[in-house]
Image (tube, rainbow, N blue to C red; front, top):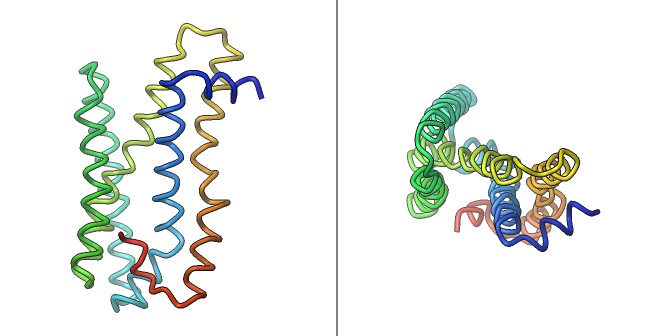
Length: 175
């Protein structure tokens, strides 16, 4: 509980916590429904969807390693954070405006995986920011920040379930 208050009172940690939760909202919105979008809505075969997933993981790992190397060498994380946010915004925009199988592949195999680099950056910033703190506070704050990623799965995921049960199309995830 003390670590939650520390985060709440510190504007930098509050921003990191909010950004972590916001990325959790993106993940909780798309990850459970990605296969339905690809196969059911956009008509990809099981094999094609498996290739999309392989591409997704390849781009995600490559981008994460590259961003990690760049941010370790240069103290400014802003350009890499901007790249990650552009991946999220670009991926959702392409998926929404394209509204076809090609747009789905570009969004989910190329752009959205780049956005996942923001999570590692947020965790790294938290560790850097709290580096001089007592171990209990530092570790507790880091644990809470990491846990904030999961909170949207408890709230957003069931909300989308109700929305889709009411007849809203799955593609409403994009905007």
